[in-house]
Every structure is written in structure tokens, then in C-alpha cells.
Image (cartoon, rainbow over all chains, first blue to last red; front, top):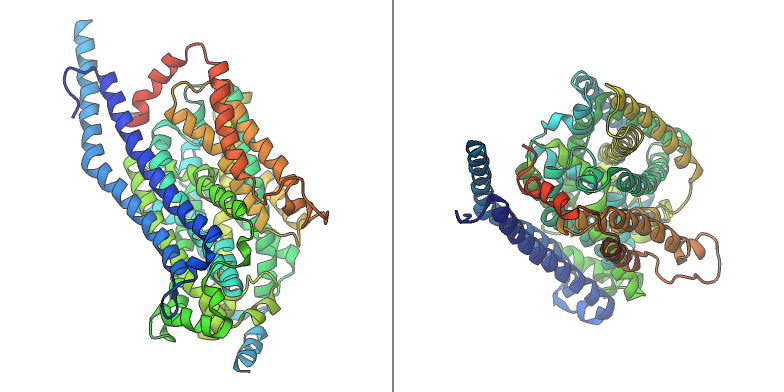
Length: 107
Length: 519
């Protein structure tokens, strides 16, 4: 993943920044979903009382969907981590090992 | 009329010693003490005592995290809340889950890579350890104290109702069992107690939910419709529990970010071999905990329709007996006995996790790092951890008895508020922000803990409900809406004013370890 022109330290920073962006975006997603739900509960109780089906109010459906959204976001992260992040970490580990070896041979 | 008869039948077994319940409970205690004996022979170093020798698999840790987290408050409390006030209880069901994705995205992997035994390890990794660890230990011990009191008081009341044992005896039994697990079996025994409890609780709740649904053609909508038919459509919509919107948002913040600052949860990530396993274990835990909270929807409305809110409040004004009453109604006394034993196991697993993380912060953060400056004598740290465990058990028993009859719900809220305001901001800043300084992190933790305690003391929960004053100085029941931003702001501003001299070099030293781990 890391370009060979970068030093291992620079490559670490690039990957750390990338992970931070994903983590921040997904955290924001969870915050928006949950507080969206809480704000609707607090300010739009009448809307949430709307019956979509006999026995199923919009509020109960959205409550269950908050849980489903939490599952989905964790799944998205784990998929990204398995497909992108773990191979990048492996490349970075190799990069550090190369740099260490180069530093030793210069000595 | 039918409900009244059923309710009276349900009431009959409560508050009297029940042979089936005591049999199940004795079985659980025997099994877990057997595991403790097995674990004790494998627990000889601090690495084993605090972190089970890093030998726990991702799957095991996923169940143990769920077992550590799903407290009796959520099983009995939410089912009770939904059965008596309908939809409003679901605010808690969702709130207690949404912290887990945050733990996964922001905390789990860096924590595993940077720390060894406590979350303070992470904050102290590139800062001056002494002030940072003192501040972190205060936040940890405050969180644990309030969480422990809530569990002990809940346990005493619950066991009195379920088994007919006196409150004080129940608190002492819980304290001694907790001490035995932690003292002899350390993290390995605690982990297995939590795994067994997670299986029992999920199995018990799923069986109960299926029994409820079998009466409604396995369609939850038919159950909800019946609840609306009997008690009005209002039970399916937000009600009077959410009278103050800011209160709801503040509580939501505490629940969401508190999870990521709970010391006993964070400590579990050190039991797995690497960051990848830590990640996988949160994924599994999130799945299990979400399933559990979805089931509380069914249990709560099931108890409302089949047992009835009046009968539930007749046994326990707080509604905590909704799930056990439902169990007796649907499965008879043997199933009530099983659910009662599950509730007891639930409390034991949570308090064992709390006691272990408390002992770790006393021995690892305060004794080894602060008093011995990072160089404890050989074997000393483990000895201190064990003495701390005995001390914590004694304190928990005394506080459990002293707080008898207090409302435990606000203490759990307080524990989450302290975790969210004292621990979480410092943890996030020290992982993600290179300019975080020693003084900045320490003041962030101190301000977070002190402002939370102060605002809780001034809140309606204490001023009006506890001291019976007409009004409270601070309007919110949960202070997280104020204290989380305050703690972040303090950490940032103080770090900018008082930077560490070699902050850049210090961050560079841990940068690689944050991603790749120690090895």
C-alpha cells in the first residue's frame, strides 16, 4: 500500500490518518442515527405515534432500526478493516522491517 | 379479571425460598467455583491475573464482553420499564447499545496496541505517568464505586424478592462470591463466569421471548397491537418519561460515550492476543448485546399484556420483577427458578469484572506506577492486587448495606456520566491528538470527574428526589451534556497553554505502536 518513496514513519502517518477518517465518519454516523432518534422522541412524539401497521408505530420501528444501524456500522467497519486496513498494516510492518534492516546495514 | 387471577398466581412464589431457584443457583455457584479452582492454578503472574495471559479468543471475549456489560439493571430494569410505561423504556434499550460501535471505531484497537492492563496505560504511554495515572485512577475508582453500589443494592433487593433471603445476607453472599472469583481465579475465572452468564442470560431471555411470541403467532406486531388495545395507543409512542428533551439528550450522551470509558469493559481488550482479535470481539459483543436489547422489546410488552402493569408494580414498585413474573406465568415455578438464578448470575459476573478492574487500578496504576515509580519488587504488584480485591469486596458489602433502599437507577447513570466525562475524553485525546500534554490530560480527567460529581449533587435526582428540596440548582438529571464538552475543552485548552517540552518526540515514539502493537 505504502509508496516506496515514503519513509516508514511517513507511511505510518498516512495510514493512521486514513483510519482516523474512517473512524470519525462512522462515529459521526452512529451519533447522527441515535441522536436523530432521541430528538424525534423528544420533539416529535406525535409523529412517532403514527401507526404503520396495526401494532407497529413509527417509534418502535425506528427504535429497532437504531439497533440495526449499530450492527450495520460495525459490520461496515469490520469489512473495511479486513479488506483494506489489515493488508495495509501488513505492508507497513514489512516497510518498518525493511527500514530497520537498511539502518542496520548502514551502520 | 383473568389478569387478576394470573397475577395472584404469579405473586404466590415471590419472596419465599424456592427449591428450584436455589437449586439452579447452587449449581451456578458450584460450576463457577470449580472454574475458579481450575483458573487459580493457571494464575501466577500479573499478566495472568489482569489479562488471563492474553489467551482469550476473540469469540470468547465477545461473549465475556456481553456478559460483563448486560447487567441485571438492563434485563430486569428495561423489561420492567417497558411493561409499565411502554415505548419510553426503549430509549434505554437503544442507548445501551449505541456505545459499542464507538468503542469499536475509536478505542478497542489502539487500546490493545498501546496498553497492558488498564486504560491509564494508554493515556500514560507518552505522558508523565505519575499525574496522569493518579487522575485516571480517581476516575476509574469513582466509576467503579457507583456502578458497584448500584449492582449490590440491586442484588440485595432482587435476591430478597426472588429467594426470600434477607437483604444483608444477599449482599454478603454476592460480595464473597465476587471476591472468591477475582482473588483466586483472576481474569481467567472472571472471563468464564462472564461467558457462562452471557449464555444463561441470552438463553433465558430468548426462551422467554419465544414463549411470549408463541401466544401471538410469532408476530411481534400482534403483541404490540394487543398492548395498544388493552392500555391505549399511547404505550407505543413517546410518553411522559421524556418531559425534558435536554434530559433525554444528556442521558443519551452519557450512555453512548460512557460505554467507551467503563474501566472493566476496556480491561477486557487486554485478554486477547492482538488488536485484530480485539476488533472481532467487539463485533461479536455488539451482535449479542443488540439481540438482547431487541428481545427486551418483546419481554417488556409481553409482561405488560400477559401479567399487567398493576400486578407488576404490586410486587415491586420499580417494575423490576416484570421478567421473573412473566417467566413464572409462562413456564411455571421451574422456569421462574431458572430466570431468578440467571438474574443472580448476571449480577455476580458484572461485580466480578468491576472488582477486578478496581484491583488493577489500585495495584497497577497507583502502587506499581506511582508509589514504586514503575519498579515494584518482584511479586509485589500481584500481592497488592489481591489485597485490593479483599478491600474492594469489604467496601462493596458495607456500601451495599449502607445504601439499602436507595434508587439505583441514578447511580448507574452517574457511573456512566463519570466514565463518559472523566475517562473517555482523555482516552480519545491521548490516542488521536499529538499535542495532548500531561497537564492537559490530567486536568481533563480531574475536571470531568469533579464537574460530574458536583452537577449530580446539584441535580434534581439528588436535590429533589433524595433531599426533598422543592427545586434543584442544576436542571438536568444527568450532567453529561455539560461535562463531556467541558472535559474535552479543558484537555485541549490546557494542552495548548501547557505543552510537554518534548511532546512531538514522545508522540513519534508511540505512533508506530498505536497501529502495529508492541511486538
